[in-house]
Image (cartoon, rainbow, N blue to C red):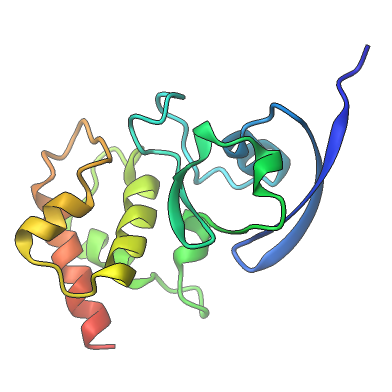
Length: 161
């Protein structure tokens, strides 16, 4: 007996996609396996680490905790959608590169999407606000200092754009 498939229409990084998914397929799996967007990483599968964070209708969302069918009609932004229109690095990506905000890179996509939303809501964070902005994402390599510097640098880049 095969599992029933459900039609799903989502806009991901500006492109509309129609896919058929089982009811219990996670959004992280639909993005990675059905759409080939492997930048959304799955670390803990419990919503704790933040590696799978994407933006759903602008809000940071743990893709490993959301069923794909729940995203019907949603506007989704993954790490692949954070580049500038010309393909160059977006401000948060540029800041991560300049400030050495990554080491192994596994957690980076979740940080980039989280910070993008955080700076949209608070474009000039204090040092403590920058720390709070990334508090829900886990990194085993960096010690967070350069990630916080990257938040502050991204704010500068956006202010000067």
